[in-house]
Amino acid sequence: MMYSEDEYLMLSGIQHFVFCRRQWALIHIEQQWAENYRTVDGNIMHERVHDAEFHEKRGDLVITRAMAVSSSRLGISGECDAVELRKADDGIELFGMDGKYSITPVEYKRGEPKEDDCDVVQLMAQALCLEDMLCCSIPFGYLYYGETRRRVKVIFDDALRERTEKLILEMHDLYKKQYTPIVKRRKACNACSLNNICLPVICSKRSASDYMNEMLGKEGNDEETP
Image (cartoon, rainbow, N blue to C red):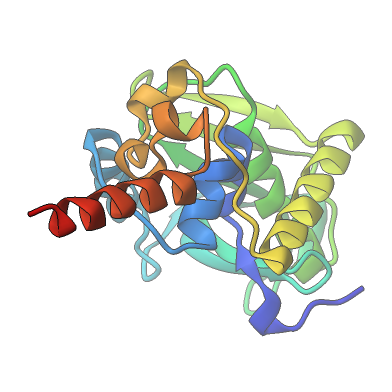
């Protein structure tokens, strides 16, 4: 199956999706957003990295920033923070460049490595797009964390590839249905920038629409009271 461009989902959304499917739906289906310290700090970090005009060369290594990527097979599009192109005999030829190069995506994150794999699948999704675009195979990539100032190497094995593609299919299914999952309250809700929109305490017991209908009903009754 091939998706048309108007069916493409944001590649970066897969990170939200793994963290919390409800958060993803609020942002990408209901178009709701709110900032907190973590999102602002993360945006500042990415603004420094995302300079599409910046290309750095260090010997056999070329680093390009904010590379636009997409996959009609997966129906996603977005940007890679950085892509490292290194001369390699078993690499691929690239337009306008001499020799052959290996391809390595690098994703920048503000904090430290997470307990879940939301960052890992986002990087894998970037690699899948690059592979589809360049007709190549990418064995690994890197996650750079601002808090630790260290890279974490991510191996793109078959299990990770399969998990990432299944997650993208699930995203398309929910988007097509325009369905926002109910909240599953957990500790991470306290730090979520959408906490006041999601209302995890209320919506863990009933739907947000039921709560709003009840509150509107109360307001209507108050207005009728002499």
